[in-house]
Length: 256
Image (cartoon, rainbow, N blue to C red; front, side, top):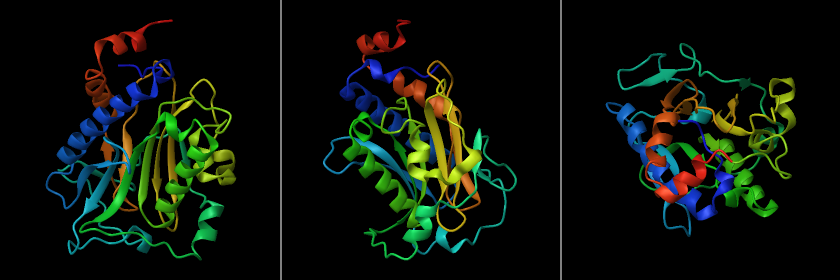
């Protein structure tokens, strides 16, 4: 199913869809992580009523290594569906390997995070209209993304809203900064983005740009600097879209 133009509907409709999509993605990821020490949870946004964020965790004492320590597990492709960067690099239009300048500055600061039971190793976010409809909203979103990466938490995101005056080249360079250089080129004909980030020292970015009407690529969520799980965005998108009320599905599927 080709991706739709979500600017056609109110924020509440897209938020309902995001809720359904996060749930579908959580089920798909947990199926692929079966037999590993990792699991995914749909998280409630502070002050919100429905999940908008997916976190991947690993139980304490399971032998997990913090991503910032840059120790990787042996390269492998497990029967549970995880892949390795060395043997199966994600299919991406842009792979950026230059460490962002803002990260070098943050390495001198102290990041304090609340840890409840199991440790978060990755976060996936679906960008909402509220993240981009004001400079304050975008600044808060970018700060959160950069803080996660600086703290060693891998990040993946999907942005189904076109570039605007506050992100004229899309969401990726706003998060990463100008450090990508010639490695990233925005295409206004493909203004939507699916991006995966490896956190910590040696941070990397994998970015695919998508147009309305195209199928979504798989999205990588990195568990360690070398191991990731591939999220079937297209299949989960279709399942979530089927849960949108018919009247709004027809608006989104309209050709004009």
